[in-house]
Image (tube, rainbow, N blue to C red; front, side):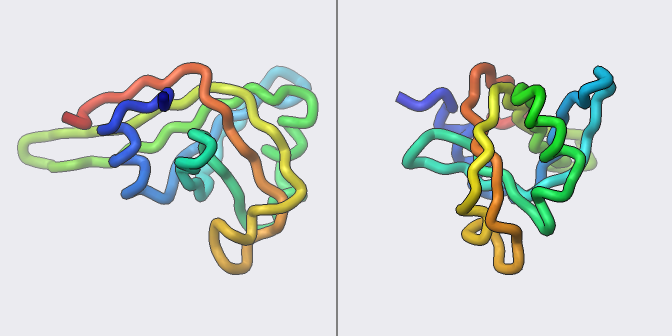
Length: 123
């Protein structure tokens, strides 16, 4: 059984951009946009990008693999309706697979195993 509800999975499959939060060795948070993909075979979130292993987020998870990612958008302006999913958990750093997310991406990627999922505005 998935940790995600059917409406969360459907929403995640329609989105490609999220914001990942990591914590650096000095305890300071760091938030940046990333490309992600819901992996239905493993019920995980796969995250990658250009020059991925050279980025701060990559260095941050070497010492603290706990991250959060928020995927959200504005469904309508009038009336105002926002929707989104926050996913918290630990990432596994993988040496390959990132190039499957988008052409030109680095081979390295994160695989987020969700521990907590919070969603809003999906119904």
